[in-house]
Length: 467
Ligand SMILES: Cc1cc2nc3c(=O)[nH]c(=O)nc-3n(C[C@H](O)[C@H](O)[C@H](O)COP(=O)(O)OP(=O)(O)OC[C@H]3O[C@@H](n4cnc5c(N)ncnc54)[C@H](O)[C@@H]3O)c2cc1C
Image 1 (tube, helix red, strand yellow):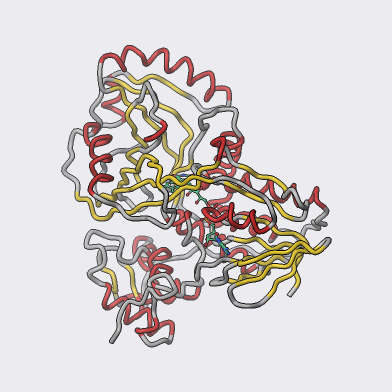
Image 2 (cartoon, rainbow, N blue to C red; image 1 turned 90 degrees about the vertical axis):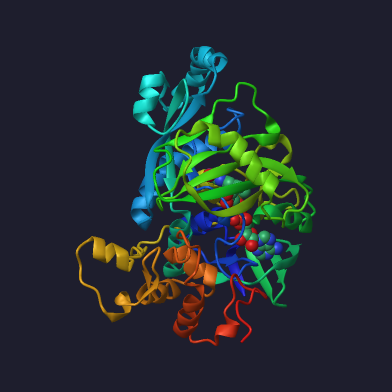
């Protein structure tokens, strides 16, 4: 099995964007991922924010974030993905911070303004008008942020790639690699061997391990961010964070973030940790979130419904590494694609395609690129005043209005697990957090045509029922 380009780890948003770009050319591309479905890696546990400029401001990370940000509206329109543009507010809570606002504005305006992101100071009255539920003496407002339905994004990228001839080998882990002159051999957990003229290592948390297979050494640290999701009611209209005059690198980032689902996330600062597989959330994580954000809100009477965590691969030098292998230009490594990797992904993909071209891949544009249909849920049809059929009348998840027909559509679009259906439909993401689960397992199994005991949450041995 021989390909022009193999992307390792294209279940992630970065790998999928690279495959999406390559799907526009006449090249044979294979995507390998160890997970059973796309989007089960780092790309599963983020906050869905389209960021703007990033510190350090002259970094590759910041440059690609700005470029990616500008590409997102067009991509979202083309792939039918929900995106909402909004601003970010850095809120002054005490008089010292209020007095510092003009100086902060001056510095940030120089950096952000130069790149086209408008910044202004909000006094107490303007802050109240812009954010009625935020308590503060004033704020710096930065334009140009966005929030996106990243589950929809992953699903639509995956469908676009499949529709346009990209091959996928999911549930397949790359175990070893050998450079054989102008070709690379990849040995996988399935025992088979794939040959590729060019390989892109987009393996997220495991990118340094893949690089080592080619004799390249990179050091990664890992940072966990915990998230708390609140149901219903508008906590904030924009992304809101406390102004930190002395940034603490140990707890950098984090904000109160509205989502496209109508929920709100208190998104966590990055705390360093040693075990990259640890996505647990404990009481201390929740205390950190409470300490950081609860004082920003006037009305705090909202119901938390879920806590989750994501892990970032943090590279040495705190910048993305996008480079050829030292052994061969036929291998490209993407190391340490941490925040804002979602924002930067479209720009990273374009950069990688240019590197492939420079390394010798002949990229002839296709003239028959196919477009993906939007995923239309029953609730969209009802909201649009349309009429529904029997399957669309059988409600499985009442909180989120997910019907049997929606589950069927999710499966048609590639879902093979419970989480695959959840990500595509929102099933179980409502206030009760899955009281419908028993019924959902039965219906998903029926629609997949498998015994319910064979259905997993996210592959491997994550079985849901034993009898
Ligand atoms: C808590 C948190 C919040 C964040 N919030 C934001 C945000 O709001 N906005 C933003 O822009 N960014 C955010 N990010 C960053 C963003 O989520 C990541 O940068 C992005 O998802 C990285 O995508 P990726 O494709 O590089 O990695 P991944 O999604 O991890 O994809 C890598 C893939 O490689 C596969 N893989 C690994 N090893 C192998 C192997 N040996 N063989 C085969 N496959 C393999 C994995 O299964 C995985 O699917 C956040 C990150 C975290 C952790």
